Image (tube, rainbow, N blue to C red; front, side):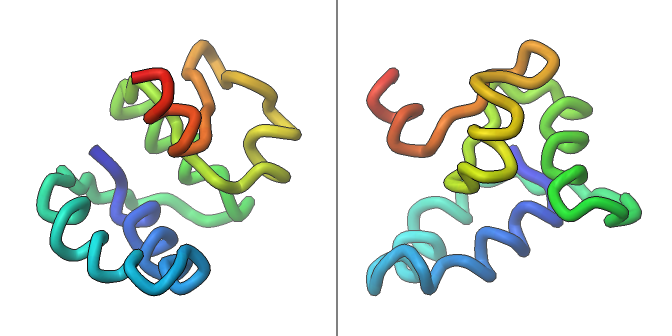
Amino acid sequence: MTSDYCKREAEHNLGKLGRLAGSDWSTVIHPQLVIASTQLVRAVKDRPVVISALSHQADWLLSLDRDDFHDLLGGEVYGLPIRTPGEFLRSQ
């Protein structure tokens, strides 16, 4: 599950992840997503990410954004574990 905001952010950043990222996104990842609509004011850039994850009772918050999530918030926010996609996959 993700929010429409997070989906847009992921699609915006696909070019940073290598030449196969767009294809993998459209054929493997995106078809499996449940996308929740958010009507949030974007007062602080990444606040909607955290609010969406918490409000939809996510099990994990996955992000490559080390500055805003990992370094600032640490390993969790309100009990919600924060991991990179790689850390998450290794834990599974």
